[in-house]
Image (cartoon, rainbow, N blue to C red; front, top):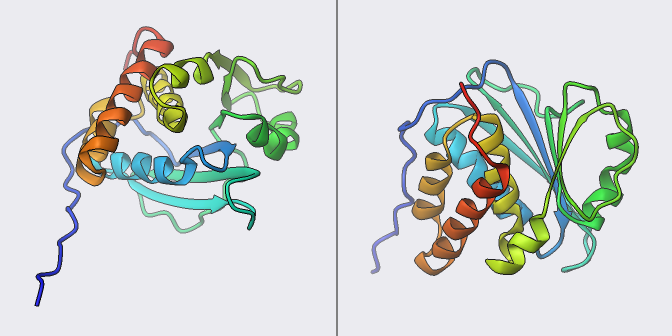
Length: 198
């Protein structure tokens, strides 16, 4: 009888700079590994001592249309998992933009939008940061575009260390996939420029 494979445990090994409950929305396309990358981000948050929730939204069609993930991070227990107004919105494809266009128009000026430079965003009060996400993904892996985007987000905000995301990737992914995503993580950090100062 084969032994059951034990899942790795998550022990707090990093700090964080999350001062209040924080909502992040990642909007992309089917096939861009949005949901699995969001899960890695949640695991990285847990490695950093945070509570985390994840809700996904995608059509029933396979490999077409949008793929969207909502994450909430908090130092306290999270009882309500809906995000009325996100603090950070990542828009990495035309499908993701189509799904979130109305939301972007309603965003408060407290939100930051991280968008691929090729996307034509609607007028918004939110702060907008544009990155060549697709170009960077073409140089690493097209399926790693979400990793590049969230690495840029973490590097820019300092919510918790990129090392926590690297740890989640190394812990929960197969070595071959982890190698690609660690490369993508470094690419995202480079796009974001100098790290956030605490």
